[in-house]
Image 1 (cartoon, rainbow, N blue to C red):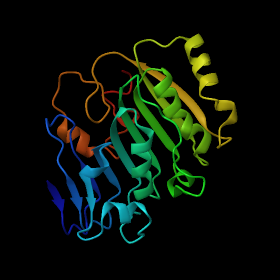
Image 2: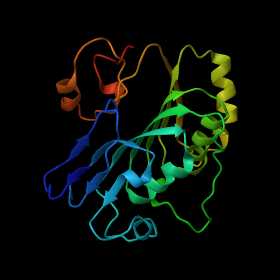
Image 3: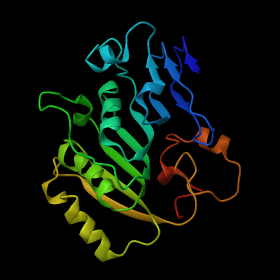
Length: 231
């Protein structure tokens, strides 16, 4: 278990996905925490506060919501929309969301929450990046939720393993119903890569770069990484 008990100046918490086991992360007090990740989509691994239950927190205990977090990265098996939405309720002022997905073909990404179940972060998210996007139905259904519901979305970036042709991009645009997007100014960007992706989203090039990652303004944004920008 990783406990952040009293960290009034902590602005970012960045952990690698390379650990074999995923610890429980307990955040008791970190009022300036803006960048958080990587978390798994197992919501039970995140504990906020000391006495409030997870059920009470998700139900709307505003004192336990982390309104300081603006950037979040999650690894998701599926990707799992219901699991990710639970995190969005806890981080209501989230602006940038990064998802590293591991495709599960049997995942059914349908909208299960009630119409009255307001997810405040959908009014604030400006950027969504999906890494290891394949374009298959579970990926499409997951991404389409944000296309159709994120009201101020500016850019949705899809990092695709291997080559994606212009025809494939056009087909994806239609499958995602991008013409019906909730944010009229939202753009869609498909980028291909080859090779392995490390926990921050950067392309591995055989160098040790922990200090490099920590020096980045946003350690999850591969476009701001000079080593990876042209990968």
